[in-house]
Amino acid sequence: MHGETIYYQPAIETMSREEIEKLQVKRLKETITQATKSPFYRAEYSKIGVDASTITSINDIRKLPFTTKADLRDSYPFGLVVDGMKDKVVRLHSSSGTTGHPTVICHSQHDLDQWAMRVARSLYMVGVRETDVFQNSSGYGMFTGGLGFQYGAEKLGALTVPAAAGNTPRQIKFIQDFDTTVIHAIPSYTSRLYEGFVEMGIDVKKETNLKILLIGAEPHTDEQRKKIEANFGAKAYNSFGLSEMSGPGVAFECTYQDGLHIWEDCYIVEIVNPETLEPVADGEIGELVLTTLDRDAMPIIRYRTRDLTRFIVGDCACGRTHRRIDRVKGRSDDMFIVKGVNIFPMQIEKVLMEFEQIGTNYLITIANVGSNDEIKIEVELNTMFTDDYSKLEKLGKEITRKLRDEILITPKVLLVGKNSLPQQDGKAVRVSDLRDK
Image (cartoon, rainbow, N blue to C red; front, top):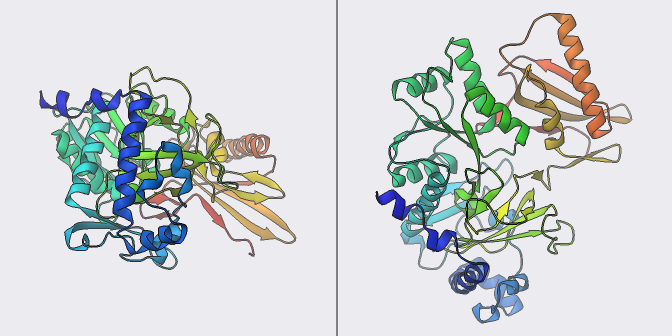
């Protein structure tokens, strides 16, 4: 029963707030000392005269400057790696970087071991055990979702199926042949996977042993999660991570699905106003800021994630005391303004998920039409859609009406066939802004 003692750690997971902050202060001081051995932080902190002695309480973290994605790109490839650690780096991950340098994150063996442990702890929290068969339908390579979940599931002791992304018929064959009980996939792919079951005449609820789905890497609404759970007849748990903080395993839902627990023994979490950069009140939406506390090769301090969320106030029924954040509402740099109205893609998704006739993939295009801005929303239909023109026309009008009520602007809605919308690095592309800048 080693899983009971290793992957559920009540001494850590049920610490008092005072104990958590005491541990965080200790590890933050160690992190600053380690980080200032890197060229980037040595230069940054010497300018303002900051070192580990500056920190006496958790609130002192506000004395430290923020780190941004631009800082990582400007320090490409190894400017944030600690002096003397480059020869101990055993793996790096990189973002795709559509323009300029990508961001590169380097890991020592210690860093990888701790990352795997956090993922294993997260998996255990939602009920995954060493007796499960874990199928990872996520991209491997530079994308952290593949290897991050792979090593975490192996650490837990589950039988792992590294299926990688795509090839739906093969995914379904593996699920049936290997008696897969747990699957990890991005939310938009779960819709394609379910459609594959329908096309092949397989009842996923009766003819598979799937009981747990792990979804993340794309912001998604609770409406989309509920749709996934209804389709598969299984629980779908939200996972949050980002490559700058290692990858998956930063925060995870427990079985109560009431927010994502951030592992505060490994991260300091702040939520700030993205304009003023001052802390917001608990329960208010702001930008998530994270600091690593247990990374050797490349510590990152006060990283502006651009993800918008809020702290969930109160205690969790599971008994874990690490702070919870709400599902990511979008990104501060994803918001777009049309005719003076602030719009987030998640507002649109929330409406779209009300319609059972459509899948989970959509594309918002904003373009100049004459002297006005126009929003076009392409929505993929699912496999059960009708080709009756009058019914499709009625559906399009109803979607348009509900979207207008939500975003106060009338979009042009186009219903398109499944699998027709673009993806980038296996993730759905949500917004294309073609307006003149």
